[in-house]
Length: 179
Ligand SMILES: Cc1cc2nc3c(=O)[nH]c(=O)nc-3n(C[C@H](O)[C@H](O)[C@H](O)COP(=O)(O)O)c2cc1C
Image (cartoon, rainbow, N blue to C red; front, side):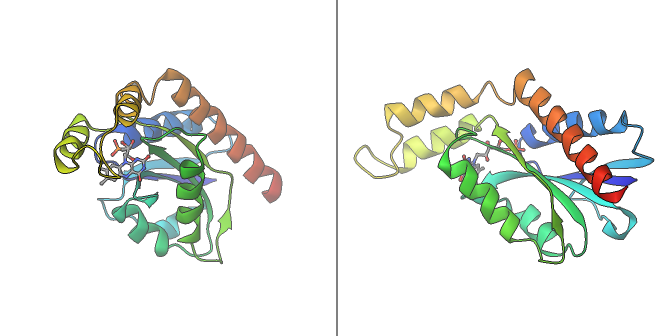
């Protein structure tokens, strides 16, 4: 099976997760060929049987480059993974993944997904503090600031291990449907 692990990453979190997933899948005997490619490069998706695509969450959906990439995929098996600043088990995380899946054409076969936290860029925290005064609905309250700070430990080893295990599970599921 020929696999593509594609990703979009602004500050490195999703790239880290994509690399862990790529390394894990590379070890699997079901995989004959595998490539790890950023969506900034040109990708010929016709070459692949199955795509694992990683995006970073932007405004509760996939980031802009991933959007473009995902909207142009047809007739593929595709497994989405992502990083976001918020908690991975939050309703916001679920909505973000659901909205990203809706970008995909109905001709694709959607495989299980994975999402984990990624560090929110401290510059973004600072920008938000300056932009929205206290009392504004989007102001950086102490609770929000604590969330931003706690995100800085992610993706951690546990996140990467969960991502690797998820990828192996998905690949076995694909193999079961093919054989
Ligand atoms: C413009 C922008 C919008 C973002 N929107 C969200 C969002 O809606 N929800 C969220 O949880 N995190 C959001 N984030 C945080 C990123 O999703 C998170 O830090 C992610 O791990 C970044 O991945 P990367 O390092 O691969 O770029 C946003 C970040 C940026 C820069």
